[in-house]
Amino acid sequence: MIHATLHQLKVFEATARHGSFTRAAEELYLTQPTVSIQVKQLTKAVGLPLFEQIGKRLFLTQAGQKLLETCQEIFEGLSQFEMAVADLKGMKQGQLRLAVITTAKYFVPRLLGPFCHRYPGIDISLKVTNHQHIQERMANNEDDLYIISQPPEQPDLKIYPFLENPLVVLAPKSHPLVGQSKIPITALNDEPFIMREPGSGTRQAVQKLLETHKIDVKVRLELGSNEAIKQAIAGGLGISVLSQHTIISEGTTGEFAILDVENFPIERHWYVAHLAGKQLSVVAESFLEYLMEESHELAEKFLPNLGRDSLKQQLAKTAVSGAA
Ligand code: PGA
Image: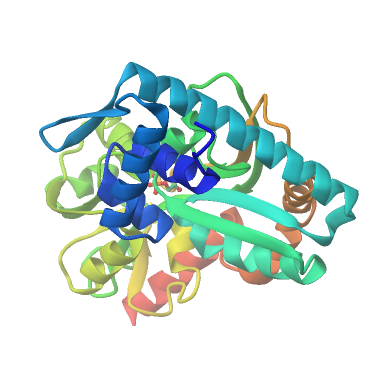
């Protein structure tokens, strides 16, 4: 083992986590042969096989499992050390690992700007992914802070709500229901619909509401990205339910209209969360505080379209332009 390097342990840990050389290589920006050579050398140093390959999937052997646990302890120890050093140096440097759900990508980078200006020595890694993948990242303790809009069942989580994240019915400007008010939800029956992928929190919230009201939309297309769904709406493929944040740049002045359907918007919030047992670094704690204290002010600046009243104003605007 004395010949094992930290790099090899990192490569091994990523391979074990993904169960795949290829995906580990992608994550680490290495080639697939480099990853398998590193794992081979580590296996030699350990003297026992670390993986079993069954079909295309890799499974950890008992020795591999033990090594994975050891790696996690080593990396956790090193990151604690890094934090301690960063704390000793004050907020001058450090790393902030954030994982956020897809809708938060419209707002979080705008929040990060002023934060990074304040603390220019900080490195930020921002992962944008859906609800299910965030839960997997939480289970693996991969990040400092998470921005979610649906608190998972996990009890060992500290959660702080910070902003509204309403889900609205988006349609192309030419849709016949544009401009109507208080549209009954039953009008969505048989509407061509574009749905987010399984594992999406948006999808779960939409399905729950539709099921409650026994509404059967016609799912024409399933897409794994809010932006792709917007393009499909603009292309006339159907309507969808998305976070209002997804039209932060264009609002309802562009190609999209928000339909005033009863029971919408689906009221949701963004929460910032961290694992309860997590030792937050000074950087992570400062970002958490910054988010709680300043996000409302920044939201007013960047998201003039949000909030209950402004949603009404937007619907009114849609009604006017829809009637025109
Ligand atoms: P999703 O989450 O990307 O999993 O749909 C977005 C949200 O809940 O706002």
